[in-house]
Amino acid sequence: AVPQPRPTDRFAELLLAVLSGQRPVHAMLRHTAGRAYDELVRLAERGPLRTRGVRPVVRDIGWFEPREGAIEAFARIGAGDRLRAMAFRLEQGRDLRWRCTAVELGGPRPGAADGR
View 1 (cartoon, rainbow, N blue to C red):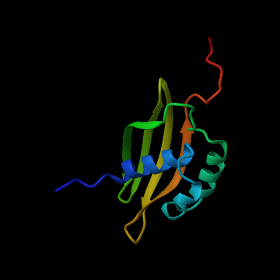
View 2 (tube, rainbow, N blue to C red):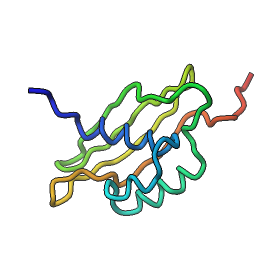
View 3 (cartoon, helix red, strand yellow):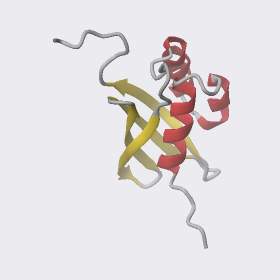
């Protein structure tokens, strides 16, 4: 049997697609709950993971389960030699579907000074 992808893997890829401009933000409507969709709209407007030339990819994912039905996750997003951090929270609803309830980005901003 083929193992099913973990919800963290699936959501990391979905969030990356939206924040890099590969998918429209409304693609996340049914995959979010609470204020997460509004936060995604705000983040996506700036296109924080858009790159020129090199397509961003999920390099690594880690997670913590603070309680049953909740996952706090992080993903390292790479584009060439640049890394960004993406954190998100997933909660399982009564219908047993996972939804993103929070998302944040960290790491160097495109166009930010190198400090050199």
